[in-house]
Image (cartoon, rainbow, N blue to C red; front, side):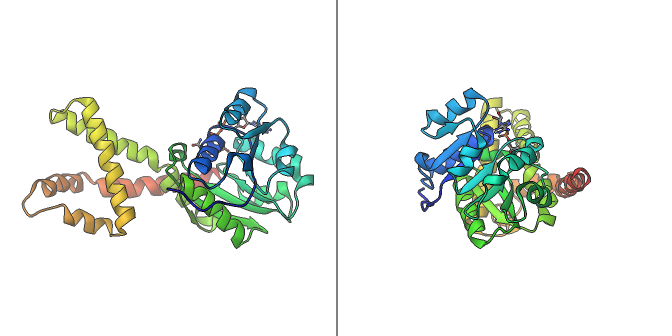
Length: 271
Ligand code: NAD
């Protein structure tokens, strides 16, 4: 599906896994041309990856800043502040800074980039690597609605993004940040059930994963309450309500609620 083209130049400081996933997504969904992007990385092999899909790759972070409107800081969290301090003298009012680093607060980003910087903090999750991220963003510094709109249109090419206040980011971490691990557990357990009931492992895993994918799509595309969708597939005295009753007896619902809350609390502790 093609999305509206963004008339901005986008740079990546750090050309690692996340930057690559984002850049490839922007190109494949038509949001940006490869020629509108530039990346920097000290590792030659990472620059070569970007060059392989026609994105200019350079060795200095300042060059990326000079050639970009929107700058993704896509280095590991401990390098974010040093990198921002390094390029700070070259930031102007045309720049938007987007940090995807886990745990780096808007206050610390602003401290490193300066009071005038327009900063957007994004909390992506790993399915970004396959173009299906569930991300959240919050605005800091002088960031405005146009910055939010630009970041929204970029992330719409690699999944979905919602805007929240920064105080909600721990809950986002507990839900969508850690959530893939919970869903992997659910898929593995469903597949185990299939195997116990007599299916070969590979068929069981494929059916379990596709069932999760399809069910998620039904929630997103119909907009119907998940409880209503569940009611629609549970016929009176049928198979599904028999299985569903076992999930309720096992406390699956409370287990998932507790998982999100525990991960949220842990995110608060370590931030
Ligand atoms: P990565 O290690 O694959 O990429 C980081 C890149 O930065 C490396 O290629 C490294 O060579 C480069 N780099 C190091 N120092 C640099 C410098 N001074 N200037 C320019 N480049 C430099 O890491 P990643 O998995 O892509 O993660 C990037 C950021 O995304 C992290 O801050 C992480 O917290 C965040 N994040 C990642 C995921 C994920 O699923 N991988 C999910 C959520 C958030």
